[in-house]
Length: 330
Image (cartoon, rainbow, N blue to C red; front, side):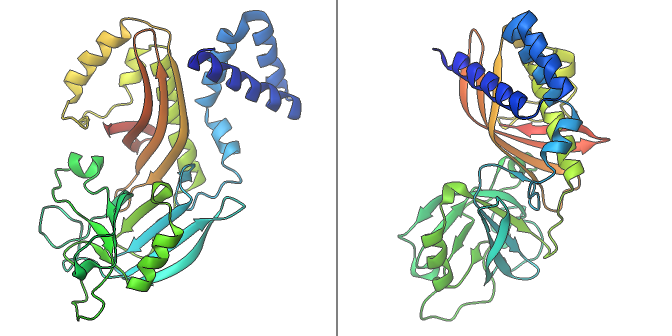
């Protein structure tokens, strides 16, 4: 059985399970459509349903969305620069994020968002921990977690610099109450993080203020609806609808601007190939200090007659009059 057929079979099994657990009139219509038209007709109908807000409104009702919609991360680190702390949230058995630790932290000497190399500012944004370094200089001992700064959005905004870490402090030396841009916490604290964190399942949110703005379920529902409407247009080769989700200011991670991107996509869509597009490990996080802006991180399975891709995808989007506009992607 091919990968595509496996995903199709699993998707159908999920639907049938839902059908027998919750027998609604709409489910009867869908099952009848499958009986008469087979899996292809049913699949398109289900894809349409995923692009409707009513589904996502119901789906999110009992979800913990204090940091957005999160599927992949069991730990959330929140650094509040104005309060000089690093909060550690852990997902519990009820899939809710509960505050476990509150560490005092040093951040950059200069206030504000990081813009350039050496500006002594700690960046504001949403980051991953990409590496752990145990062999560090004594000033950063005992270890350091390297962040993903500059991320795709930082690069889009022309920010520079590198090597932003969460690290320790000198054991027997005095130090300033600020850093050159990193986040520094006590050595006992960072050892505790090292013992407790899986960096692959940890997200870091750095905010300028202590009152991190929680996104409403209504806003998240709009983003999810738009994301799957974009996917629907992509999957069924509606080029005009697909491109309508891109901002006029769009620049792809590799520097490709919207005009060239449109030409590139039109050549691909002209093939009118049958496509399978499945999103898993989906995470949607409101971007600190950027109004109506979200970072979307997901694992994408894409297969057509000519291309197969399985890997990570990142989108930075803005909601404009409830419409998703992609400003950069990778």
